[in-house]
Figure (spheres, rainbow, N blue to C red):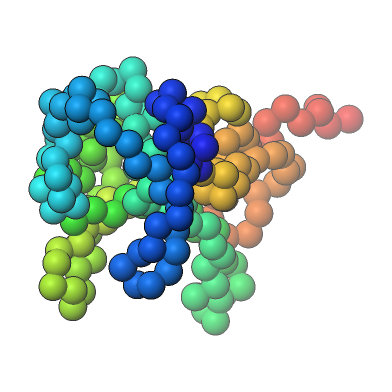
Amino acid sequence: MLETFRACLSISAAITPHRGGHGGTNLRVQWGDRHFYEWLVSIGLTPAKSLTLRPLAIPDIVFADFLRGCIDGDGSVTVYVDRYNTKKSERYVYERLYVKLVSASRPFLEWMQTTICRLLSVSGAIHDSSGRRQRPLWVLRYAKAESIQLIGWMYYAADVLCLARKRAKAERFLSPLGYISVRSVGRPRVGWVYNHGAPDPL
């Protein structure tokens, strides 16, 4: 990741070990560039940004890339099979998909939600996930149908820069998932095509 980061910014600063606050050792790239810092501030980034982050000056043409970077850093792609109601009926087996973005700044998430809705026409929902934490924590979450749209938008090409392990979860939702001749049990599976392109019956 750090090598990719250096390549994106065309910098040659060394990757060095760094002891974290909990005693572990991580790797980091550290360099000084006053003009780059001033540019970051000019688009809305601030020191201690977790709590102070607000809308940023991100052009629409690169917003999908910006979103992908946010999901890689502070978000998740979650896929699981929900069997919670199978005691009622074996048909109640659902595949769940969620794309989530977490932030301590609700205004930032509201801006993300509004911008994504304007560009992609998906709404999502913001939830308070603070619990017993002293600091606020908010989650912008998209359910399955909207998540599939987001995934296709973020990963618009095979070679976009991204975190491989998160893309791996999203990979099978990047194109039509397949063809089956009849509908499966349970609710319709978003992304599947039913009775489309099948040969005519003899």
